[in-house]
Image 1 (cartoon, rainbow, N blue to C red):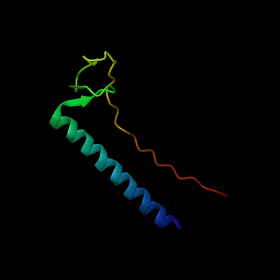
Image 2: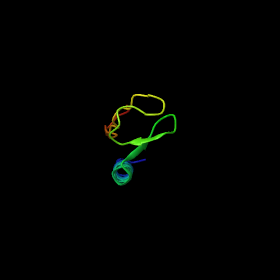
Image 3: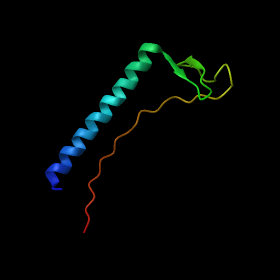
Image 4: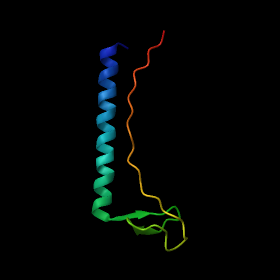
Length: 72
């Protein structure tokens, strides 16, 4: 694999991750709900599940970190 192919693959992967993140964000924005680990549907702003009491943490957006690694 040459460096141009690696760059192309990394760019494609970054684009796919951005598209996935945008799709998840759009889905949550439309439904304004999310699912607890117990399966209960709760408001997107809920801090606790009203069925099982599980503390709900805000979803963090995935971060993409691209680093070049040189192998000698």
